[in-house]
Amino acid sequence: MDNLRRALVEVTGTEIQQKSVRKCFFKVYSYLLYQDTASLLETLDYRKSLGQEERKRENYFVFRYMLRLIKRKHPKQYDRLCPLAN
Image (cartoon, rainbow, N blue to C red; front, side, top):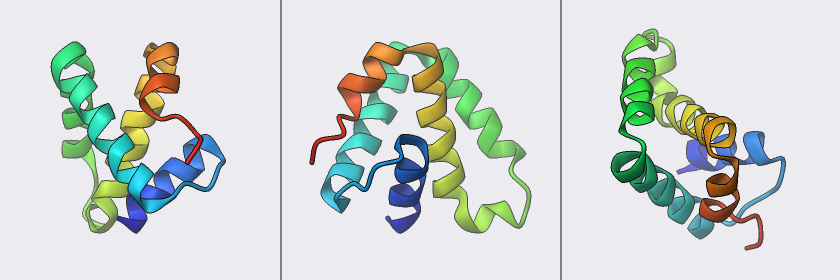
């Protein structure tokens, strides 16, 4: 879970509690799964393109990619899915 936390801190620039990181991950994943399947497939393609060295920290790279995708394509949903308040 530290990799997920590091990815969220990197994208948001704010320290987040571990419990909030887990919630944010599942909310973002669920949103992509149910509302934006094209972005989910794009995320899976990105995951598939990761090199051998990056596979060790796959959670970090994939979650960071998902956050950036949501932030770019759906900025209002990004604020709703991952509020910065703990």
